[in-house]
Length: 278
Image (tube, rainbow, N blue to C red; front, side):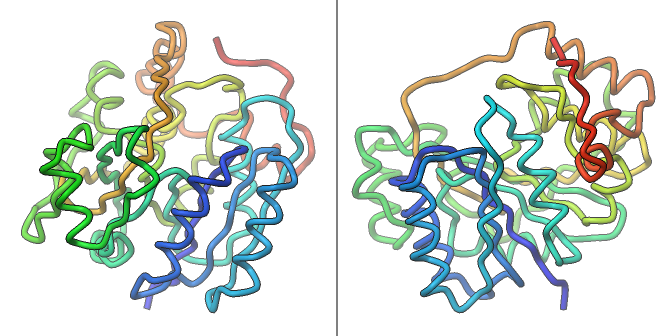
């Protein structure tokens, strides 16, 4: 049996995190462990996580780093370092999993591949009553309380879209498939590319940049639209990375780059680079 480490990133959002963790505790199968990767939240998040640690039958670890500004790549790398599983599923604390989320990712796990799932959006004004209980879920889908509803209904027969490095001559088609809150890979493969790029210190397509290096090392991408699903509890604000950040990611793709210069190895050595990506 594959040992899955579930990494859940969060930052000062205990309301959404509580709903997300509550759903994971009911999952079958359970992951080997759950790591809450906390990018410097205040005490209310720690108190919440501590309460879940006490009641969870699955080992749960609070991985914390001080708040020095946006550093989702850093906290994901730190979570990967502290994980003990063979296979990593990376998601966010504001993304409620479909009941088959873990089992779908287990089915999708295959040597030589990394996986991106999909994400539907629960509209901000409706997040309070949301649950993945079938009657509630379908009420939200057909009651138009979600955006991106076409990926909100699981298709158990879906076959993934599979792409290798030759499919991408620019970063945009790759970025359209990448979703950092629903990203899974073998831990050894993430280590082989030195993890996520920690030079990104503002919201950026760090998922696509990491995927570009995974493709460059010879791995293939699997993309599911209606399996491996999560429901994002929207905040009501939509950010778009700058063209300069996409260009930075494209350079990684086209140059054949494999390892980032500022990732897991530098994190372990305590020598994170001081430069930042555009």
